[in-house]
Length: 200
Length: 200
Ligand SMILES: [Zn+2]
Ligand SMILES: [Zn+2]
Image (cartoon, rainbow over all chains, first blue to last red; front, side, top):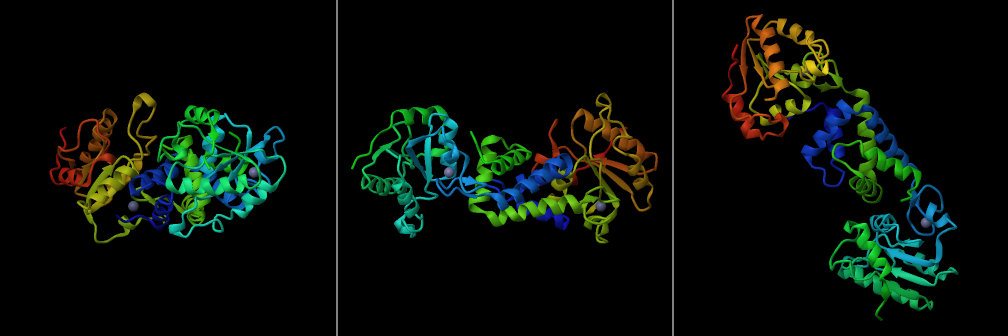
């Protein structure tokens, strides 16, 4: 199949999107060119702007334009609660549930010694610094119910306990082996309400 | 859910892609920012370039950079056959089958009098001009097996017959009411080989 270079390039570029194969990329490319040129222009611009402007919040590591994200800057949020999640997708899942009003910290990964991912690779000294800041009373572990997630939770628990902080975990309701980002809001809401003390 | 402006803008922009809803757009935005910044940059550039460079081939109306597309410019293709399709997606479907070596003409729509889409709206005078050019012996109708597709086929048949050209249609194999772009290559291949004379 012989496409014009720019068209082929567009198809190839669209395949960088998750779950987008050759056929879907073709359909997307045609849609952008044929039916939604305005949308296509906005998409190109939005990607460029996001790449240029978005960095990680200095406090919680969420994507944000400035030094500090809107949630960390929001004085209405509860400073006593710090929810530790693995990824931005997990952060979105919890925040979308509407059941949580505290602060966050994003690990941006999981401990996985076999893959050479230790505390240094995840820059967990940033978490230690965050835990040293005054105001936090409870660390809520919202890591995945996977082996790596458990190992990560154990490490964070130690960091928090060493500072005399209460450590809780999301309640039953998160299925074993389940990825947090795919769980519906009401289940997450229940899991937050029923959170329990971490086992030592 | 409160995202940073640039991030929200990226999610909104991704929703212009077909079949991409809120959740998928979020996942795509995270993927671009977290896991594939290089791919994201290439995507933005590819969209911009495609919008800037791609117009319609003057002869067949396929997307192309120059005045004439690679297929129209290819002297190896059979000038005697002109395959008339509705959309670029249908063109891709036939060309991908590898079973056709002639020329194309894209209608870029279907006649639909009830929706106010007549020959003028589809600029079918361009098709008449194309049929007036020397060399064509057979017009292959590859329009959809829908009511509008049939009406369109009837109109093209008249144009072609008025010029003494043979008019054929894709053989049985294309299911009734089926959209051409979703049909597999081998079925299309058979349908091309078994094409028959159009009924008057
Ligand atoms: Zn923050
Ligand atoms: Zn052409």
